[in-house]
Image 1 (tube, rainbow, N blue to C red):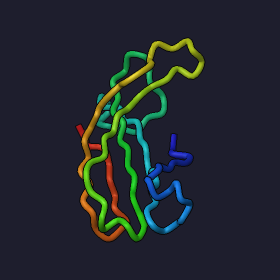
Image 2: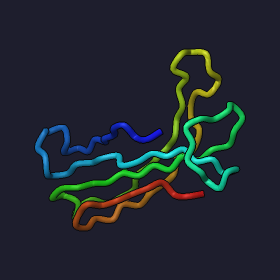
Image 3: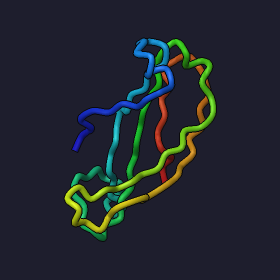
Length: 110
């Protein structure tokens, strides 16, 4: 299963002025650690799995950003029947260092 779409918000996106600071989710993969981290779209309830998330920042303000991304993985049973609801993993802390964009980020590998 590939990422169909993704985006994220920054304080600047509320002003609807493109080009200052924009964020985009660039990938999300579910990996099967029992199969040498092969990408998968189908998991059994008791299967172990890892999720790799990547995203980027672009725009004129990328040289002045800083701090940390705090990334957590949550699950929600869409039909109200599943048992997998709530925090699955995290938080992971991903440092932000300003520089000329695009700035690429990803969740840490296990």
